[in-house]
Amino acid sequence: MTFSEICKDIYSNNLLFAAVVAVLFPFAIIALGLFLNALRDALGVIVGFVTDPIIVYGAINYVFFPGVMLHELSHALFAFLTGAEVTEIALFKKDGDSLGHVNFKNRGNLFLVALQNTFASSAPMFCGAAVVWGCYFGITHISILWIRILLGYIGVSMFCHMTMSVQDIKIYVKGIPIFMGLLFILTLVLRLFGVI
Image (cartoon, rainbow, N blue to C red; front, side, top):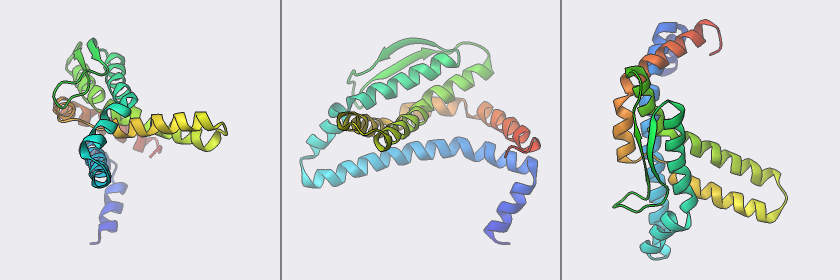
């Protein structure tokens, strides 16, 4: 049996398809977050061959500071939207490897706490993707040069910081079991109604 035949069999079985999506999607988010982090670091190493690595580190962390702020604000936004109490937002406060942080206190039942953990910790990737896409769209559709430069700067800044830190992943993992259950139900309902 070939891989494409296996995929067709999985796709044709609603329960199996929902189970595969529910198991793979949460870990794909972690893999994507780690990949983006590695890609940013690899680009930094490549540029570091041409210039001093300290300059590259400074550019990523200080020149592109809007990305740090958007990263932290996305954590805060998703924590708030899922019902957590945001207790502290540090948009640019260097502490070891961390350039900023958001502290939130979980509120609600086990289901809500799981959603708060998964969505708040992975928020920079989703918000980052939206910001980068919005900046790209603006660059390709706006003819005013200074706006295009500003959008490019914001887009690159966000791209450099739309990753998941080790701390983000630790919080994210806490909510994965309930998140998987929610994904299973959502995927199954969407399959039964013919949406996917």
